Length: 431
Ligand SMILES: *[C@@H]1O[C@H](CO)[C@@H](O)[C@H](O)[C@H]1NC(C)=O
Image 1 (cartoon, rainbow, N blue to C red):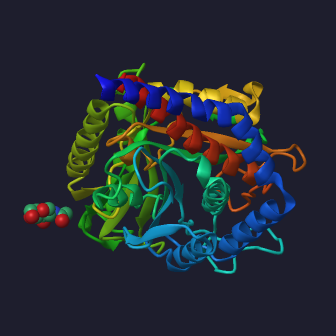
Image 2: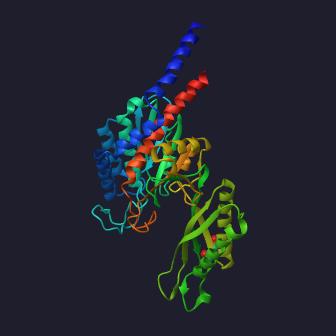
Image 3: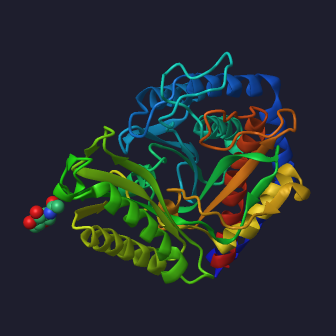
């Protein structure tokens, strides 16, 4: 009886204390002001430019990872490394539960940057054209904010710097490392060109599609192009395969259930007058539900093999492998949706928090969402100064560095507020 009475008093005190020491809106303003301070902003710009100049592909982010660890060392933040080859997982706060995670992806794309500027990619054929340089920077920015205010943290923030988002499924390997057990929620931000600077876009539930890759070799018999009767022409067979694949979505899929099959690769032949032995085609397929996704997968294989055989060719089909796993759909947790909208409204202003319809793009963030509630959102960066901005994955893609403080402050506020609120609810549970 006595114990429970004291327990009650302590509970009341601990319930009241955080509310007295700071309110959530106050925190968001504090963090955003901090992120916008010229010394913090300039540091973030420097970090981003350094990563932009030195892009590395999935699972090869060795220098990026080293640079991140050096910055964490300077901030006095402890971390685990290596995780999933090049990944780094940092920890800020009490080291005790509750745990909340923030994620940034580190890899670049294999494409040549066409933007001429002082900090253009120094590596021919590699470019940060998906803004992952900005994502790493925003997470390091959040790390600086949170470390500076770590006395306010009611638990532990876990920083996930993950490799190989671009098809490599780095998130799956991070999940498989087992280091994310006991984390209650995870958040990620993705920069988005063409939407106003400092506005966020997301939705509750299914947001991005599940995706897979396929590749097929269609084999015939090569020979002289002018004597086709002595050959078995894989070019003609593959052409029919491509056309037939278009009918899967139009005739097999439910028109109300969004799906895509695209052949994006067609390689065969090398001379005007030679029928080649084989043709290789490849592409991607997308759907939101697991059932639709598996139906696409099965039908793609049947169509390729069946249509090749009509033309007397053989076909072998391979799907996503361990290196390029199927990505599940990105499904935003319903409970986190309200939380995200409240916090983002505090940091960016309620008018800057927008709903967005689902996209057929995909994200390996979905692997985290399979083991814990997760929330993915886009952050706009268009200030209207550069005409129509180039899209993600364009060689002309440009990241507006003015987005960095917004992203950093939003990350930091999401994490700090989540810990704060989950501690309050835990006490309520005990009561
Ligand atoms: C297809 O495979 C069968 C069985 O292996 C083989 O007999 C045939 O020659 C192959 N056809 C072509 C065009 O490669």
